[in-house]
Length: 342
Image (cartoon, rainbow, N blue to C red; front, side, top):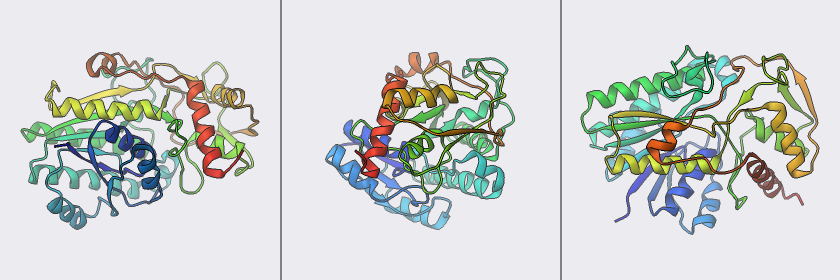
């Protein structure tokens, strides 16, 4: 019997790539997504890639009645990977209550049903935003968390605390939080990738949409940071590498290899690149021009961060493998495919 995994937010960017990797490893997948930032056609693409169509239900997990009803029907789930959350830093500054309500209530509804139905394992989509602007780089898992720079970042920190307290109080329930750095790129098939609804909040889809002519120009937020070229530095990880980390984490919990009821790992490459480096590398790798303009800093953004991935490499046996050039080429291949560009 194949193990059954619920993937919340499974038609989204990281969720869809993780569904592919799970199905490639023989897991049965059921997706819950409200399609607020994704498209139902993603299911067709997943089926094309893997030959298998995941089960799907549409609702928002912050709706307690619908979430309870779902678990009454699907009590045979072996594990949960929880992606479903609002995730735009800038928007969270403008709409904090929406972010707290959606991101925290959905998690608590999941955990309550885990307890009710004796479901032991949850892998959570966390973020390096919990570190704020760290005093020392690279960040390790022992780097102190700082007060978040945005409501979005705070929902991740509070969610981690909720899971820690829940798993300690509820014997037999185990959680792993994966603290992502900056996921970019697309599946090598170019059938799934980052396809935000409306104006992109993330850098790479804004780059690819500008290169494709959908946007007049890319805005680079700030050139006066304390970095070599003045633009912010991030650790950019290929989305397929990130997806594979979730499969490793799920297997760790299912095989009872976790060393505590709540664990957390940095999931990045260990390398930091500036926004300007990323834009220039994209243009060089793909042979396209991207018009850009430097503008003011954006509220909630930090200056620089990248990961020390030693713990994930050694404890999980996972390592990011794809190069920045390969990743940016995949992002452009996806954009061209979805826009029918030559």
